[in-house]
Length: 250
Ligand code: SF4
Ligand code: FES
Image (cartoon, rainbow, N blue to C red; front, side, top):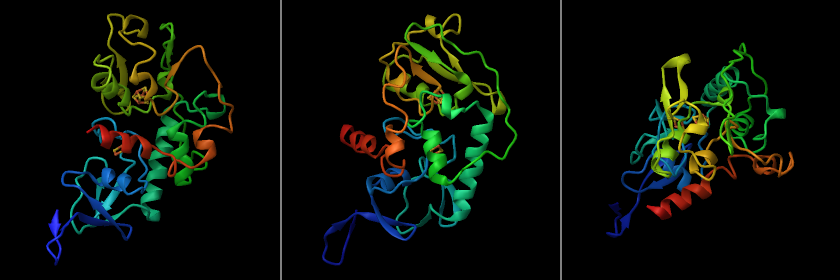
């Protein structure tokens, strides 16, 4: 808080693409932008969980320097660039890499229309992958009676890891390895979901932004074309409601 000329306490602010954004002490650029209803593309960020800073899709320029908006504290009087063509091109490249590193065959995926990867790609104008597909062949885990894990769609955002630890109090998932060898591991004696503590109502099941973790026994309950991001772009519906709820819960 800063006092104005009349001694009234004012929130500090920064400029995001020229728009004045107020922020509370300790808030990140992402939190302040979300509170102001401004969308910064992101994948590994979910306002209900500890920021992870791994996907780098939220990279903005803070006074000319690239930083992750989800982990960088807002700075009073700073200039933040979010929507330049150069940043959007960087995001398209990152998205292209995510698409070719996994098997994201949208027309056959139950998550299509509710998938954040698909929706952010549309928002950033990524129309077709231009890189070579790697076609990974990780083994699908359908051992659990109520949940299926399709690791070939996992974007390694670690949201299920954080949700299982922070919300479900379990630690069912963990990240292992580095670089292209990084993978999502299941914490059980056999490494199978069936032998883990996972319950189909866990937050870790519901939080996956793509179709890597899906509940069984239901499919296409909402027809394609009528799903969340079929109706409106992610910049409008996104997780701003989650942000408001997270603020209220703090
Ligand atoms: S399974 Fe889903 S939530 Fe978990 S790391 Fe992979 S993409 Fe993220
Ligand atoms: S959303 Fe910030 S690094 Fe992923």
